Each structure stands twice: as structure tokens, then as C-alpha cells.
Image (tube, rainbow, N blue to C red; front, top):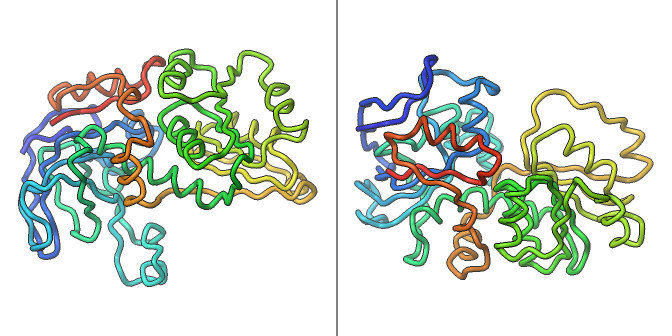
Length: 328
């Protein structure tokens, strides 16, 4: 099969072995893969990975061959991304995504930027007819956004600030908005802010202006009760700490690398809670996409073929781009 392989010499389209169908597994013919921020960081060498490696974990396709009679050939599907050992405490307590021995598609084991991929059937989710392959690549990041909302325990009409206007930030803002929160979206990328308007978000704040007073004035001077940090930068985290209300919550979804100094006294004296989210409710994400409650198509800036993989990664670094998909 043809695969887009990251080697020490860069990205290369290569012929690789078609993965064998093992008992309990499903072979999927990949149709579309989104390039994520993690993919880009591995490609740039900012995140260590064992090479050669097939990247990609945000994907959708159709079943090519199945060892599980519940899953028929030709069925549109997407999948979860963590393959756990099934034996540890986390696996036995319904927290398989925290398994210490897990393999993560496109990060610690080969991913979906290839013609085929084999996945344990328990990780496979069927897609309804209303969700095409490109839309299906948003299920995984949307599931994270939904879990972030659920864990934040935000009450309807509470003020939420989402920092970051990339794919993650736009999904987070839409989810909190869909569930009735008063959402503000903060960013400085003019192209991304334009997309935010196109998908119907209302309270869009440009960081180049007097953004802090805008947020404070909308929250009786105390700041938002929930701040979602979706940039994965130290600056975004510092902004979250500076603006969140006393007794408020900061949700981390962007994977900030490296140490960050936080004075525990600041958290204690202001009773601030912080949590992170890496996985979520796939079935809820599929339902929201099926019902059109989340707009994703306008977030796809460019589409490429597998043979154009290197070009696709270069395009994904451009400031005007929200998301790039590779269609196979």
C-alpha cells in the first residue's frame, strides 16, 4: 500500500506492507486524514518520535475487511486513537485512554496517512450517511471539546473564554455555545477570526485591541468562570491565569511543551482549578455533526492527495490555514 512516511530525511510517499487483519481487528480503507498540531510538531522535530513513522490520527474511511460480523465491508467509520493493553487499572476502570502501556496512532505507532490501517473493533465508530469522510476527521477533536465542556461543569449562560482560534479553539467555542454558555473567543489571527464569524460565533475578541477590558466589562469586572486554553503555548496559559475569575476553572486542551512556572499561592488564594483533556465522547460528537450543530466544513482550508503530502504539511503551517486534509 502507499503511505506517507516521516523519516529522518522528511516526508516520503512509499510502498509499505498492508497491515494484516488480526482477530478482533478491522482493516479500514482510509479516505481522509486531517493534519493536526501534533502531526506538525512531530514533523518539525519538536516532539520526539521513533522514525520512520506514518503520521495521522484524525481520520475517516470505510471498512475494507473485518473479523467482527457487526462491522460490514463498506461501512463508513472513524476510530479512537489509543490502543490500550486492557489489563491495567485504567483499562479496568473505563479510563483506557490513560493506560500507561497504550499505543497512540500516528504518535507511538503507525497512523492513518496510508491507504489502509488496522484497528481493534472496540475502537471503531460507525458514521451515518450525513457525515462524509472529511467531516468524519473532526470526530476525534470534537469529542475532546465535548469532554472539556462536560468536565468544566459550566452552568447555562455562564461566561466562557476560549483562547485560540485554531481548529481546537473553534470547536471548543462552538460546543460551549451549543450548550448555552455565553462564549467569548480570543485570538489575533485575522484569517481565523474571519472563519469564526463565518461559522456563526458572536463574541469574537481581537487580541490586538483592548481585549482584557472587553472581557472584564462583560463579566462585572471579575473575569470568566471558565477559560479554555486552546493554543498550546505558554502565552495562552499565562493569559488564562491572568483573566480567570476567582474560584474559576482553566481547561487545558493545547499540549504546551516544557516547564511553566505557576506560583501555587496564586492558585490557592484565588481557588483556581485546572484540568486537562485528551479524549472524549465519540458518539456525542458524531450525533452533533449529524444534526448539524457544529460547523466544520468552513474550517477546512485546503485539501491534498496523499502524493502531495509534503506540500500539505507545508500548507498547514501557513497563518491563513485552519485545517488541512489529505484525501486518499
